[in-house]
Image (tube, rainbow, N blue to C red; front, side, top):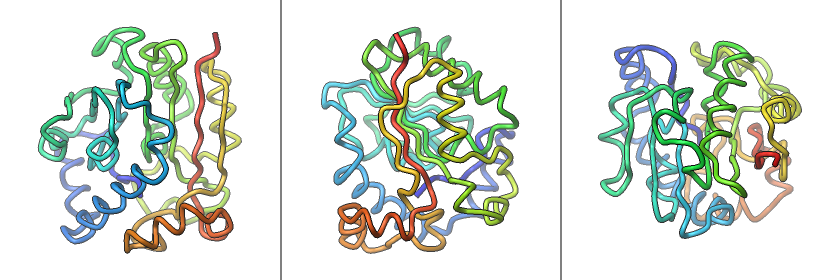
Length: 230
């Protein structure tokens, strides 16, 4: 369900990757699935009056369908402006520069889907997490959806722009170092990619989300929710 596009390269690379990796039909399917995922599951973490940021928004599936008072999409790819819904505030920027872009304590919820595996190393991950921690308000939280390399195995490298393999344990360790406390962790949540295994019809995805045993069987991505330590 992740956007699975490089958010660290140049604009031309981003555009070519996005066009090559997903057909128009696959992008339309992704859009429908994100609507279900937001309505049936992720909305429980998002107060309706919240300010929400999609960090490395990619195809904008999450930010276009989540309900919130203020919705923000940030991505290096200028195409984010075309993919975001009209009501979504868009910024073409480096995600490590979020404090300068939005200001400290300006956001209630940060969402990061399939972005951290594109970072070059752990130091860069800590830098981005520190930036997110700075923009979160007291009581805010970060939601992370990420391939679990322990479960994905060698398929993690099927996408040439994947550079930082993480498990749910490694991600929680990085969060702790960056000053976060994990409040929820599902080591197995969604399948690895919409190209193989994600339930395509919306009604099947709703059923999948309601059945933890199905997630245990097919889930290859972890879902973590964490809040900044006081």
